[in-house]
Image (cartoon, rainbow, N blue to C red; front, side, top):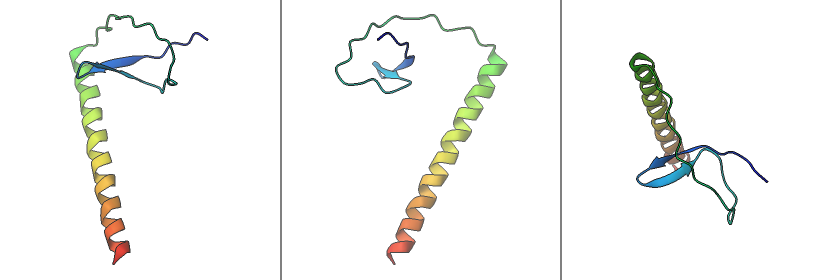
Length: 71
């Protein structure tokens, strides 16, 4: 089976964009990053920040709901 799974390097480790079954043989190739205009990159960064903030809010609300249910 040959399948392409993309990923990124974070803290020196390769993080795939999809799960890879344990024991799978892989070939790692370093690909050139496409050039993204600065204004588009700024928009991507803003969306990523917003997503992170939204996730934190949802997690905080879930914890509060869990605490309320235990009362």
